[in-house]
Length: 79
Image (cartoon, rainbow, N blue to C red; front, side, top):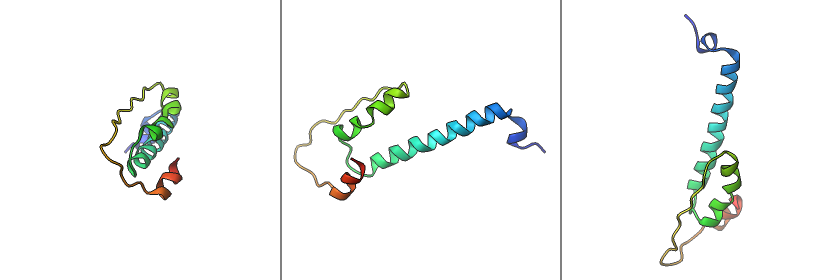
């Protein structure tokens, strides 16, 4: 019985490994963003990285009708 490594050429397997690893990094970034309030300022810190990947970043964060609580420790951790 052949395993995936036997059926896929080494060059392709290397690309798949890198793609998978990059996908996990992107998932980690997205999950981090979802841990606290998403604001335009925070999103803009990722703009260069997103554009470098050939993607577009559109931030649609209308002002809230009133102030909201922000966990300062969590905010400082990411900003």
